Length: 161
Image (tube, rainbow, N blue to C red):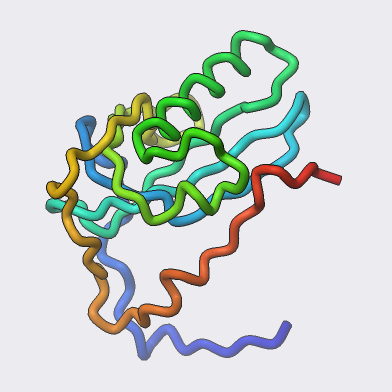
């Protein structure tokens, strides 16, 4: 694929993104994908923070909803149930039903280990009280509105080939 870019015309990013500090954040699912794993399937969810000083940052959750380990599968299904209850989608038929609904997520920092840098884990989901959810704000003034709604998602009901 032919691609041209002159880095001299764009100021480099000043800092790398460190993990979010541990805490509670109001966020919403902006992307979802059902992916095969070595021992089942994982639901990968991307959340965008929609309030506070970290507005616009993203954090991800990977839920092993089908797994050879009964314990891993049970944990993931309980987490998915908590998310569904928090956004009032009790009978999930498509992951798009989870998108663009405010939810309070609990984030922890996983310490760096070996060659892996420190990262975030989402450890809980809670409903946002009606009428208190912040309105999503675009962190980049020039970002087109259509780009935010064009995120691809894999339907929950579709089986991996």
